[in-house]
Structures are given as C-alpha cells and as structure tokens.
Image (cartoon, rainbow, N blue to C red; front, top):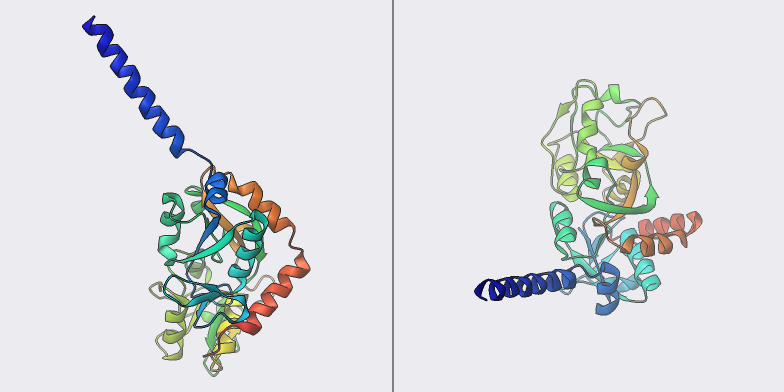
Amino acid sequence: MKRIVCLLLTLFAFAAFASCGAGKSSSDLESVKSAGVLKVGMECDYAPFNWTQVSESGGAVRLSDGTYADGYDVRIAKRIADSLGVELEIVKTSWEGLLPAVTSGKIDLIIAGMSPTADRKESIDFSDNYYTSELVIVVAKDGAYAGAEALADFSGAKITAQQDTFHYDVLDQIPGVDKQTAMKTFPDMIVALSSGKIDGYVSELPGALSAVASNPDLTYVSFAEGNGFEASEEDVSIACGMRKGSDLASEVNAALSAISDTERLDIMTSSLEDQPVG
C-alpha cells in the first residue's frame, strides 16, 4: 500500500510539474495578443535607425523615462504592431543586453539595426530582412583619410567599430590597420573621431549619413566594388530578432512583406530628414 501511495504522489507531482511547464510554453504570439502590447528592444542611440528625443513630434513612441524614441526601426516596429493589432512599447536596451532581453522574455522582438549573422542565429531566430546596406568608414572631413578610395589607403590608420558587431571583425580586412579597442556606442565613436583619438570607424551607410548630417566636421568613405569590405548578404542586412522557435516569425514576416521596397526607402529617407541634429 505504501508503495502505491508513493507512486501516486510521484505521478501527481509529475503531472503538476508538466502542467506548469505547459503554461510556460504558451506561444509568444498568444502572449503578445493577450497582453495587447508588442515589446520591442533597441538602443535608441543609433540614428537614423533609432534615437531618443524629448518630444513626441513625428509620432515618436514614449519611453519609460518620459523621453521618446523614433527612427527607422521604430517606424518598422509600428507597422508590425499595427499588423498584429496591438500597441507598441519600446524598451530602451543596451546593445549587449538585447540578446539576453529577448531570450529571457523581457522583450518580444529586437528591432535595432541588427544583422542576422551566423553567430547570433545560434542564440536567436530572425525574421526576413527589412533593410540592406553597405559598409563605409566615417572619417574627419579635413583629415588625412578623407580622400581614401580603397581599404589599402587606411594602412596605419587608427580605426575602430562598435563592440559585439561584425563591423569590428571586418577591420582585419584593412591592410596594416591600427585596430583600436571596440567602442560601446556610435556617439562614443563620433566623439573619439572628432577629438582625434581615432582616424575613423566602420558604419553602415545610413548611420554614416546620420553622423555627417549632425556633425559637419565629418565625412565618410564609400568604396567601389573590389576596393571595400567583403561581407556576406546576411552581414549587411538587417532583420528582427526573436527567441528560438518563436511563432511570432510568420506574423512578423507577413507584416514586413506588406512594406514595399519603395516604402522602405521612403521610411529611411524620412528618418534621415527627421533625426535630431546636434
């Protein structure tokens, strides 16, 4: 009898555990729909993809600290939230904190100018691409490298890129580069470049256009085919990140597919025009 009782108690305990586990495995889509909110993580510090501003002008989204977020990523996130029929909440998150935030469930999606690289795909899933760009090097407008035309022209230059990005990895493609320590944010790199601490930093073209618009002492070097960086399509593309196995993927892809290439260009153009200057 004691054995039977013990067996029954074990079975009940297992059933209870399984029930709890089933509750936790409810779909991401159901959770978002139930909450009526799509939580999207981004730095809010990488114009024109995302930035922070003090007012709601331009339809910016309010952040928890009372400031507002806008930019290309925010506008794409709005389209996805509208497609899902839910409200959009932007969760301001450091770059290095984005993957942990989505895997832990703190946010539902990463929409932060993030490339779907092979390394990241080991930790999270990605949507279809929502932007594709090219790599350039931002330099001082009156500096020694403003007239550069090929990577070889940067031999001996002090160049850096944002930490935990493939931008930093491609520095090794510059012959004789004086590779500097990676920096946390693009504003950090702009300050370092303007002060002469570095000679340049790697950026995607929209980010470079944004930096130059806000800092007239800067310019950027783009490269003809064969003279610049070698990068895979996934490296120069940008997609939405989500936790492994998330059923949000199909809904997000459907929302993205409804945004034509012309609309995406228009959204980027308007983001560049609307970004805060200074």
